[in-house]
Image (cartoon, rainbow, N blue to C red; front, top):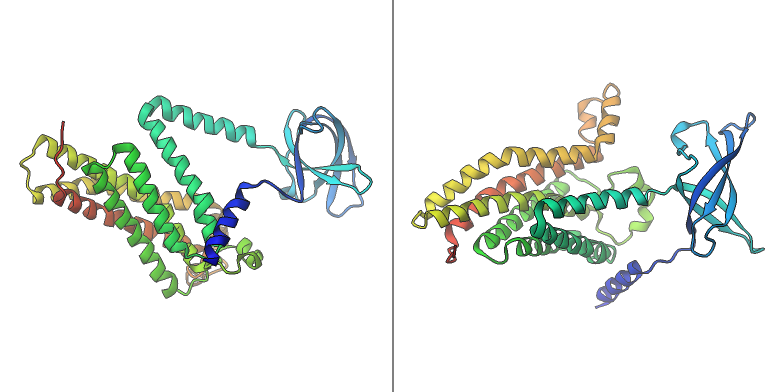
Length: 358
């Protein structure tokens, strides 16, 4: 009961927007001055920008902000006149405020890209596209308002990921097809495939002695992760990460077999099953590549680091870095989930017989 109250509290907190630090939007009007810092070991120059505040309380107010340029270029962000920036507002005890440029404001670009995605989805898929967007919104909402707070509250990430995956399958496929024969078959195939991938990753997580701390950042913030089942997060990531691809292949096979049964009602269960296996064989190649390439793309910087250090570490060491092992585990377990979904979907399509109407 105590955990339930903690979970509800976390959900409530996540909906509230409060912070001790205050950040506001501003627009860079012009570069006023650039001062060289010859005696500074870290900073090469300090630029002074004139910035217009775009916060509701101080809208239109002009301030001058110092912006250091570091000698180590990787620390610098590019700021130019005309850009929108995020300003950190440091309130002083005497009622005045100092402002510092924290970052370039990327929200307009995010809104533009999101609008392009939504627009193309609606134009190309129309009603089904709208349903897909609705299901996506619902699933993302559940992930951020239930799944993540549940993990923080101490619940099993694997159980929560499994329930989230099941919910995602039900919502997405129901909105696309309803609880028709092909919809039910797709749900069953995708759930079995994903749960198999999650179980496999769970077994090998413990078999390989993984800790769950796969990055330097996770080690640095280890004190914030007290009470969280870190090891299980690896398997939870496999379940959620492979859900889309497994659902896709299950829906493709189920839909194709449903059309075959409509055209040829007298087809035997054995013929339906092997038709599904042949269809799945054609789809597997691209789907497995899609999932593995997605994992490689998401960890591309890590792959570059490994490549650059290949002469320093032998293969026996490289293949035992936890960050490397976890990415391999995710890619292979997710791909195995896709493979398992093919015969499972084909099997359920062959035994489940709901009367179809043209």
